[in-house]
Length: 181
Image (cartoon, rainbow, N blue to C red; front, top):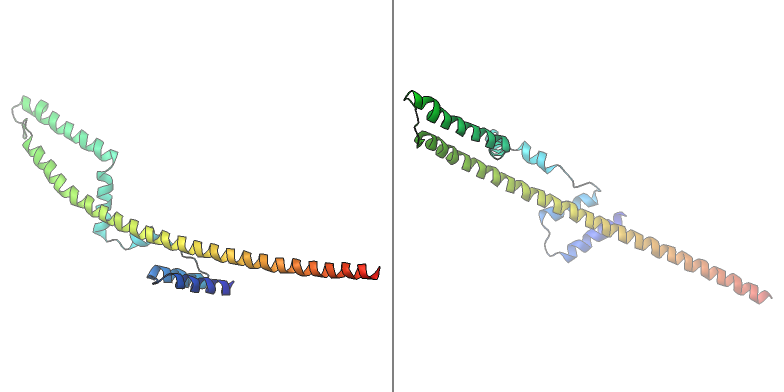
């Protein structure tokens, strides 16, 4: 089997003009009979800084239903407080056009947008790492399948040769029996 893997490795190298780092890694692991699968998410998450983890959590919360309901509730509370409760005494701190509320919403949007974009950029990097890992796993699986095909072909050829040899012996024995009669 080791010879077949070596032969497949050389065949793969011959068909590919240049091997990239991932192909070389797969071939090396295949020669050593090691697996290439790994948890890319855990590896990626371990390298994140505190700010990156915080940005991901903020982006995850900002894109969730609890955030929408909480935000909608806060808006209703703000409007009710200024339009219904405080306006009765003539002391609303943010009357009807709600300029202060608009300022807060603008500030929230200006802070939330870059945080979400940073999180999306990290997610795209994570997706590229996952795709590269999937390629490595698929390449190794393809090479393993080729090795299995080679092994099955050699076993079939060996079995075929044994059958032909047995048939020759049987023919020889039958020929002897015919000559004895």
